[in-house]
Length: 358
Image (cartoon, rainbow, N blue to C red; front, side):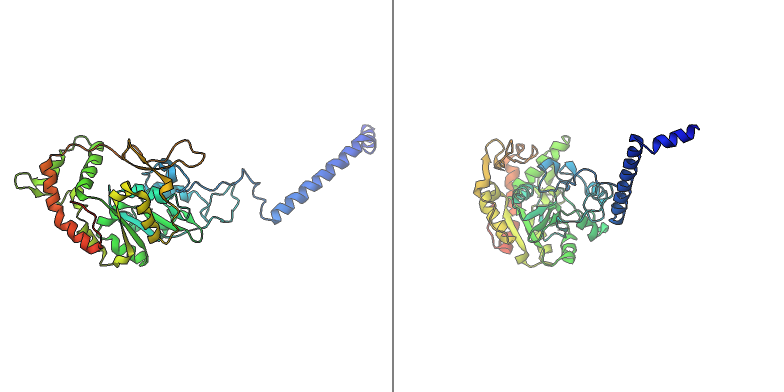
């Protein structure tokens, strides 16, 4: 009897209308679910709007790629392996079509030299919209060559048609194996070498080293095998890097001189727009980076990029740049200049450029 009354109540009045509405909504839900399944979206619903990973050109100097300029290539690779197979991060396992270019092996590499001005050059180049560059130094051709070219490619930023992929590792210039390895990758690679007065460069190199290891011996005790005879210790890297002619001879076995551009580290400070004009011409780029982008920072003693519209401050190199050099006895500097002079002259002849180092 009770059941009969319940059925009668269900088949009449508001309860019946609510039941029909429930059935109708259930049917809509089922049809919607089937539609998404047929469209391959049934695994999950979209999460937040997709955001492309911050690139080395877009992030601040100290935060590019890994959040630290000197982050290792292995850390970069781990981060990229967490992305989806096509290199773009996906949200909730939904595959995302790549509309942001592709990863290419670099067409241009800043191969040297350490403490010559390579970081400044790369920072200035990043202003150009057609340059995409790795922030951290990959060290592929000197330290990680066994990882293979595909690993190296995976470190590169994505580029669109007409953009140039670049990287900077100053130690390549003095690495014996690097020229042949780069040639194996591309005979058409454009190679940029930033050079600086080798005596000043050696002191700058030592200054950076001693800032990290204050217990190091004095500059002069490391520069000479015997201070009495004045015999220079060429096994010390701070001295060895500055023998540019010797290193260039190795490179010219694999690349013609036309594949190189030699940038003056001194002129990059005194006339950054002029040197950047030469670099842009060499890379086949329009001269976008001009004198309007620079101002000279009197405190640091080198040029900085003017602040972009909407930015709170200009873009200068970090605190590690512009350190005051220790006082080196004048006789030590004179001996070093005498040592480097014949190598400098040979370098001028090889490159066809007089850099004016006394």
